[in-house]
Length: 481
Image (cartoon, rainbow, N blue to C red; front, side, top):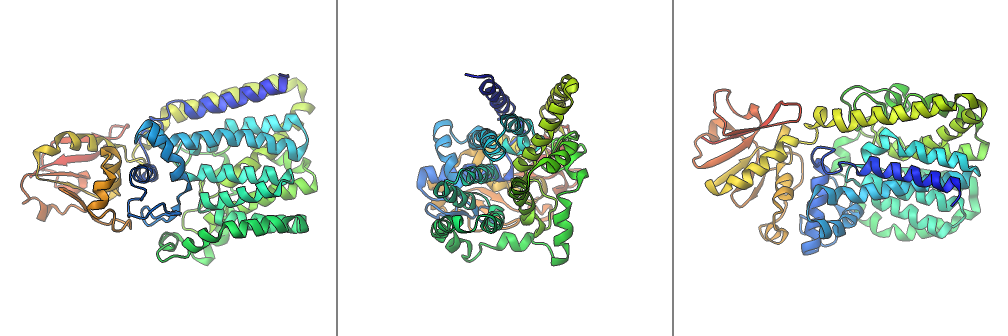
C-alpha cells in the first residue's frame, strides 16, 4: 500500500474516532427528532407500523413533520441488534458520515485529477466542526448528504444510471433535498444537456410514490408553520454566506460547537484562494451545489440554518482543499506551521465539543426530562395517575416516555396510537397523561404524580425530586398534591 493510501486510511481513522467517541453521551441525551426516529423504528420492527398505525410509511408523520422515513428503516436493524437505545439511533448517521468523508475524497480526485487535493478535502471534512456536530445526531440529514455526494461522484464518472438512483435516494432521505436536488439537476442539464435525459427519466419514475405522498393531506403542515414571507427570502438566503455565521461562534448557537464557527477561521483564505484556482467547469459544478444548498432554509423562518444548508459543506471543503494545496506547495517552509494549526484546531474542537458543549446545551436536548422519566418508571406503581407537562422543558414529553420506557408498540397501537403529532397536543396513555399542567385545578387530584416545569407550580409547593441540566440549573420537578 503506497503512502497516499496510508494517509487516506489515517484520515478515515481520525474521522471515525471523532464521530464514534462517547457517542451515547455526547450529545448528552437524544434530541426530539432522535426519540421519534428511534421509537418509530422500534414500532416498525415490532408491528410493521409507525406510531400512527400506518404500515411501512414513505413519509413519517412524527410531530406532524412529515419527514422522509428512509432513515427510520436504516435504524431498524440497529434497534434489532442493540435495542431501543441512543446509540442504535445515532450509529447509522455516524457510519454514513464516515463514508461521506471517503466519497468526498473520491469525488475530489475524479473531479480535480489531483491526489493531494482529494486527501486534503477528505481531511477538512473529517475534522469539520459542522460535519462532526451533525453527523453525531441520529438524523436523516446525514443520509441526504451521503446520497447527494454519492450521486455527484457517479455523475462525474458518467455512470448515469447509478447517479440517478442516488439522486432519487437523496430525495427520499431528507426534506431539503426535495428543493436542492431538482435545482442542481436543472443546472447539470444546462451543462451536460443530452447526457442527462436518461437519468431524468429514471428519477421521475422512481419519484412517483414520493410525489404522491408529498401532496397528501397534512403533508404541508410543518412547512406552513415555518415558511417565511417572500420579503425575507433574499436576506435569509444571503445570511448563509455571512462570514460571521460560517467562521465564528459563541458559547451557544444552534447546531454549532461552542466557541467555534461551522468552519475553522483559517479556512476562509483557503476557500477564497481555491475559488480563484478552480477552472471554469469545475467551478460551475461545485458552486451549483453550494448556491442551491441554502434555498430550503431561505423559504423558512429559521435562517441561517446549518442543517437545511448542510449540502454545501463537502463542496466548501473541496474548494478549501484546492486553496490548501496551493498554499502547501507554494510556501513549503511554513508546512510545520500549517500542521500545527490543524493539530491545535482539532484539540480546541475536542475541548469545546466533548467538554463545554454537553454542559452549556443539555437543555436543548431536554436532558432533565430524560432524567425524570427514569424516576417515573421506578415510582409509577405508587400512583393512580402520572401527569407530564408537554410544554417548555417537557415539549413532546409523550415521545420521550415511549422511547425511554420502551413502551410496547402493539399495546400502544391497540390503545389508539398517536392521534395528532401537532404542536403541544395532549396525549393519554393508560394512567399517563401528557398535557399542560394547570395547578389551580390539578392540585385537587389525589394520588397523582406530576412531572413539570418549575414554573408550572407555585414557589411554595414542595417537590419530591428535582432534575437538573448538566450546568446545574433545575429543568424539571416532580410534585404530588
